[in-house]
Amino acid sequence: MNLEQARFNMVEQQIRPWDVLDLDILELLSTLKREDFVPENTKNLAFVDMELPLGNGQKMWQPKLEARVVQDLTITPTDAVLEIGTGSGYLTALLAKRCHYVHSVEIDADLSAQAAAKLKAAGFSNVKLEVGDAAKGWNTDKQYDVIVLTGSVPVLPEVFKQQLKVGGRLFAVIGDVPVMRGTLITREGESAFSSVVLFETVIAPLLNAEQPQRFKL
Image (cartoon, rainbow, N blue to C red):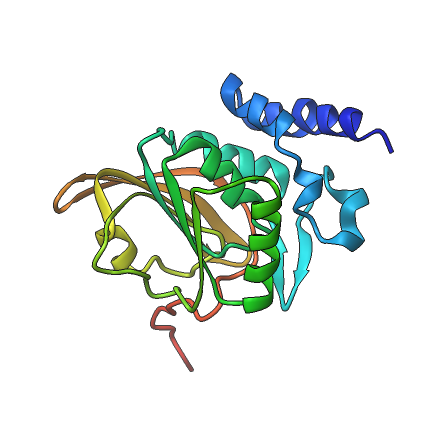
């Protein structure tokens, strides 16, 4: 398998057509080695347009989803980022390349340990990983410039909106199968938020996510 050709094809055939046109993002995707973060038994699928299983019901996002989210969050070098769900560590790495630091929380201790080893091997020093259930918030006394939820939620817990600094951006996939919407929320003021639906998609749920009141017969 020609890795560089596969990487080039991923960028040109999957990512650009999904409206990822920021040249810095495209360069990052061309240089940060995705194959070093995928599970060993799926390395031959590292550049395929599909979710990859990580174990225990967890999945690695499609390349185009990772790229689009990193682009649309408009991350700056001074940003502090909270990631809910470390997963493979690849999205963590993409975020860390763009921001000041990433604080990432993973409920699965094994996944967190694997991601830590991969991030260390890749030379990242601006990432803090923790193990825990962050479905209802994490470090709730702290605010961040950017928050990313890597699992879908039926409703977005209010706590995450309150953890945004004014001007901060949050990405979450909100809804239930078959209708989920990749949503970008910006905190415009202390009590003012704007929301934009970027695309429709379906991803694995965030474990222990808050559930809405549901009608029962």
